[in-house]
Amino acid sequence: MRWDELKGLKYYLGFSAVVIGFYIYSNMIGWRWLNATKTTHEKSATRGHARGYFYHK
Amino acid sequence: MSGSNYTITCLNCGTVNTVRGKAMTLAMTCSSCQYYVRLGKWNTDRNIFGYKDEPAIPIGAKGKFDGVVYEVMGFVVKQESKYHYKWREYLLFNPMHGYAFLSEYSGNWNFVWPVEVGPKDNPDMEFYYEESFYRLYQKYRADVIYARGEFFFDVVDLTASTTNHEYIAPPYMTTLEKNGDSLLWCKGEYCSPQEVAQAFNIPVSRLPKKEGRGYTQPVVTSFKEGTLIKASLAILLVIIALQFYFNSSAKEEVVFSGTFNQSELKDQKFFVSSSFDLKGGTKSVAMDIYAPLVNDWFYADFALINETTGTEYNFSKDIEYYSGYEDGESWSEGSTRGEAFLSEIPEGRYHINIYPEFSVSYQSFSIRVVRDVSSLSNFIVILVLLAIFPAVFFIRKYMLEAKRWEDSDYSPYATEE
Image (tube, rainbow over all chains, first blue to last red; front, side):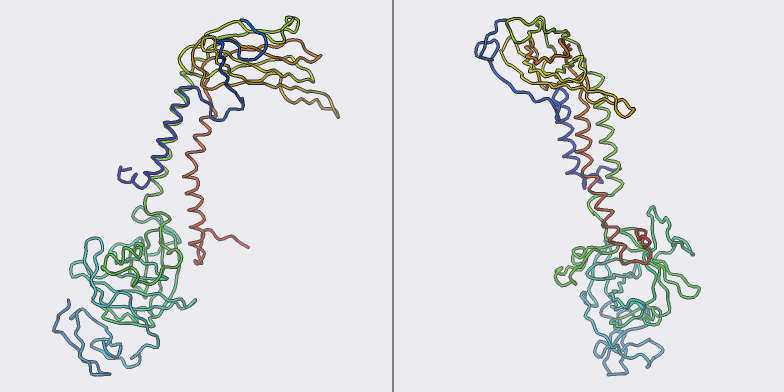
């Protein structure tokens, strides 16, 4: 397989490179693309538990 | 060959015709009355054709194929004997490379040249030749119904007396002309109308309009099928190697495990885990939950809390397990275990708040928190993503190949009805 034969596949190879790069990045930060666990983020202003009711660690 | 002073006078109309092929020309038509003559032996039985056509490429035009300049010597229209379809052929000549043909059917072109060594004398339905796999596409006899220009053989009688076999391996074709004991093998290659127009330096609009796909037209011209297969396999190997690396490098460290009993709940309505550290930058966290359920369900809201930043990651988990004995068989559905997966959790010190809903059949549950867990789903998703193009290509190729062979009596895609 010569390199010039791959020219016709440049879009597929480019797409593959981008997807593989994204795959590597995702695995490095522990990002599961299809995750059945739905997670919501909240930021507590008091550096404690963000819910309104009582809690003191 | 133009400019030759080799001439012949038409017996029909008296026009003096210049013979560009000189002594090589064995048959020609009069430029004025289209009278077809065999030089050296006049044949008055077939003097004029009952059909007329205009060559899209004029006689005498010069075109370059693979760096070789050919001159158009003759033009014929042939008609297949059985189904009566017509196509056009141009006889091309180069003094160094000899003759070749340019055939055109429904605006689809093939450049065809004779070869000294053909595939074999008695070809089967299919064979390998010059690293390509050829299949018999059509077998036919034909007649010349119109001719114009000069020919190095008696194109009318030769065409009528030969049986033709055409084998294709798009974009290539091989043709076998059998005439008694003599065999003539030719090889051909598909040419797009643009390539033909460019070769003769004429506008493509002067060529017949292309209809449908040519029977030697490749599915794609920008790459080879084998290249796609090799590239896809290489990509697959890269992905497998990467997945193997991520699987083996995932630490899967248990950072917390504990069991929680309902009796421990007093005034508060939730449990608080002890603190634990998540290390290694931003990674995943998986939580295994176990509840000893029997025909019951467990539900809890969870909050993974970063004690430094106050960021909460809220999620819930539902576990169900039912079993029984019915009609002589025991059955079960669901599980007493469940997993929650949290993506992109930064390092830091964390604890978990758990808001459970207890039922009557159980009073406890356990959780186990694991840091840096590999994911198989990403691997499956990327496999699917990168398989789309090859899959679509081969499905489309199959459909186009089946359509290509619809006009053939020897289609490998034909099904018995």
